[in-house]
Length: 436
Image (cartoon, rainbow, N blue to C red; front, side):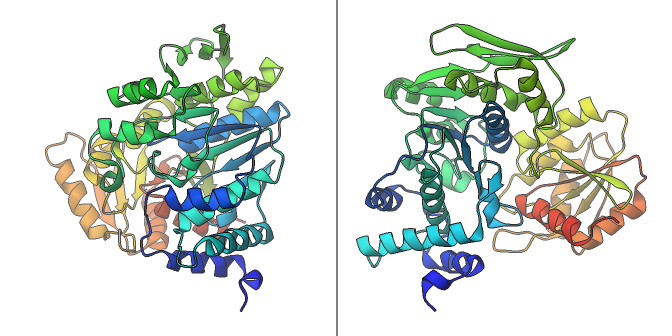
């Protein structure tokens, strides 16, 4: 079968098998191919978003603000949940199967012409395809989410006008290091000389400031040049414009996405001059922003569910704060499945006081762990803790949801979290078994 006739699913399956390593950080291969493609202009302006947590919601706030202002916007994010097409968003629509197949064929043909022995990772192939597709659209703005780290991530072949770091915490330690200084250095690799670098991490590692200074990037920090506060009449964001003039937006209502990520998105949009002309439109855009798998609330099978991809301690702490503020009187149950290379005990510690019952499931794959292993880690963390929560395990996600429905009440809140894999499974269940 010629590659030009392959379906999207065949392309994706082929891509998974080409490179000897699933993750092989470095820019040499993707840079060579991108140069051979002619390095087309991806968009008039580019914002790259990196960080440990909060990338997706920051991208969504920024995307929605600039679209509401009337600009042509394209977005590249990862990973996806149910369909690969979710990764590339062009002016309100996910990219089509046909466009993706055309892009993959173009990238593969280019790489083979350069070097028949060259292989690209799944992520490298997808990133090049996304950039090629975005470049065809004459966009005002492209927003690119970093996949892993920053310095050696395939997205970093593109020079952004603004680089945003959302948060810094320990995750992906095998690739990024085991302390926040190393991780900060890797994340700051998306900064560029003379360009704006927005750091939304309150406890910024010194490595970020050092790297920005070495490059000559224009670093601004949350709580200093820009920020967010909660006032009696709502949230208030403030920041700075390129000419040094201040800006602020107050009376922002509680959004559906994490509050903290409004600030860097507003700062980036303000700096670009891409905010809606109407203050009310700006407020409503922030309030109504939503993103699948991030604080996503659904009513299903007579129960209230909240789906979130939180899978490290920093994200879990933020979820605990959300529960304390938004659901202080509600009984909370948790459906949790986590990969073995994550700090499971740190996640449990952050949420131990918030959850009254834990329903644990195993995840398949080379990085997965069984429900029994996860339950053992939870029991260790619960020892000596004043909050006595019940816990049990289920054979699979379908069984876990049935168990939770049986022991919960309609007014309870059921969290589904711990991994993109867990949330993807739940989204698939909701799609295959909709309420009627």
